[in-house]
Structures are given as C-alpha cells and as structure tokens.
Length: 190
Image (cartoon, rainbow, N blue to C red; front, side, top):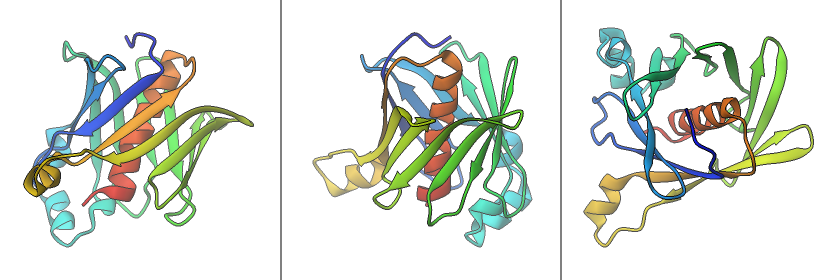
C-alpha cells in the first residue's frame, strides 16, 4: 500500500476543536499518500463532547482510520474511554499496541503479542522523538511549525510532523505514522 520512502510528513487539516480530527500524510515528493480520519462514532458521541468541554480530551474514546488515497481502510486506531493513553492499532492481518509511559518521560513502546517492536523516546518538550529497535535507530519524528507570512495563517496552519528514517517494512511505516499521530493527540492536542 505504501511505496518505499524514507521521508513522510503528517499535517493536521482540522481547524475547529469540535470537528472530526483529520490529518494528511505526504511523501518526499509532497504527494498525498494517505489520510488519518476520525470516525463519526467518537467525534459525534455526546460523552466525548462533554469530556472535551471540560478539557479532558485524554479521557475520551477514540477511533481513527488510516485511509489510502482511494479511501480504502489500511488500519484502525482505537483508544477506550478512561485515563489510559494506550491505543490499539489493527491492520488487515495484525494487532499492535502503543503504550505511553508517562507524560514527563515521553516514552512510547510499540508491541505485538507481548513482543516489543520498537521504543520511542522524546525530548525537547515532545518536539523530537527517536524511534529505536534494540540499539539501532530506525526513524526520527520531529514536530515543527509551518512558516507563514501572517499571524492568522500561522495560527490556522498548525504544525507539521517530519518522519525520517531508513528502509522500513510497510508494517513499520504504518506503526511509525500512527505513533506520530498519537504524539500529536497525546502531547500537543489543544
């Protein structure tokens, strides 16, 4: 589904807080290759609206789909209501878990059937993340502001996540992009 690239960008397309979350994913040629889109079952649920009203976004349930350019579902991301930030990622043939180990430590562990696939360590107030499998770095995730000529454009444009790495399997690409999305929703969501 994903062609081999060593660089992706992830950018929010949602402007208003009450809208369903939507993010575009582009490759190194700035071609849109996929989209993250929040399912209406969670964005329109009354309890989730109430939690967001009281600034308790992290307690709301979440269901986001990773869609191809032809709107085919590549993966589902689920988070249950409650205090946990952990999410489950389901692809056509596998299920993965992302475990968030505290907001101060900024550590995320990706697992499948109890086996650690990679660890993500954050620094610089959750702006820079290093993705490692064992001792080998396989990717970096960096959050950067988009330069804009006016304050209004800068305010509305949000931030851009740069995902850089080496050769990845399609499974790793999906997991790393899902991790970048969850970094935004966990550490930077307004």
